[in-house]
Length: 154
Figure 1 (cartoon, rainbow, N blue to C red):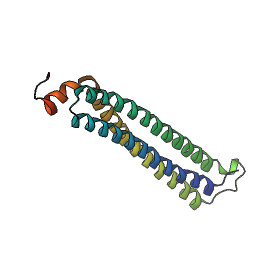
Figure 2 (spheres, one colour; figure 1 turned 90 degrees about the vertical axis):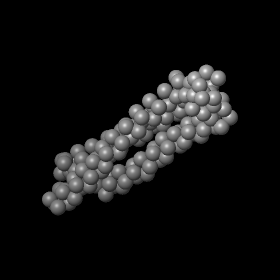
Figure 3 (cartoon, rainbow, N blue to C red; figure 1 turned 90 degrees about the horizontal axis):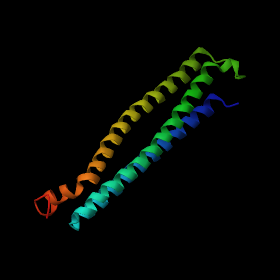
């Protein structure tokens, strides 16, 4: 049977996974920006538009990975909460009121932090996916007008 300390260690290990998921998302966005910048440097409107498709795909995969990490974390948080609330029923010695409050407070803080991060990640996801998709659809026109020849068609 897992102890509360063991469960807290698992939850803190998930923090490392959260950071790794954030790195994957930032790496995908960076690849998209580098490829888009390269297309502008070589003055290729078609390549700039295709970079939007690459960016949309990479970012969707990265956010799916991040969502999976977040879901696993939240599942483990709920398991820990249930274990704390049912401690005396699953073979763990009964907790003192102070120990129970400590564990519940820790789980509550971790859940609140997870919720705050989830909102920020979702907003970032929607914004970047929308931008990459618009670049994919209209990137050649934008690149021609802004970066290449000053007109929508060169």
